[in-house]
Image 1 (cartoon, one colour):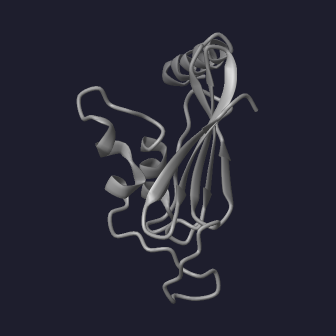
Image 2: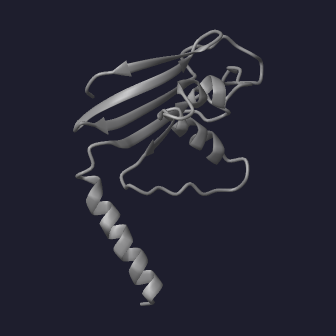
Length: 138
């Protein structure tokens, strides 16, 4: 086994062992109706996750959606919202490209651990704007 491979395996093992003792971590992302992504659930069982795929498959959409779970102290709250990260977004019907007022289809939901409690947060697209909801223990 090469020295590089051993080093990577050591780092990976250290990261995996730390996840169980971290007080704050993202557990899962759920996307529905956003840029052609329908009912996508992405679990984050490890502290490191790799998104890979061909151009146009949704990697940037997933990263932008993940950014909506966080708040930067420097940038302020408005910079990490779906309205800021998806400025030209318009809900569309499932079966075509026609614009629609579909409310229940478009959402970004996060499950996360904070202070050793599992919580969730949801961004949901209404008729003309995004709304955010926080939920209790799940």
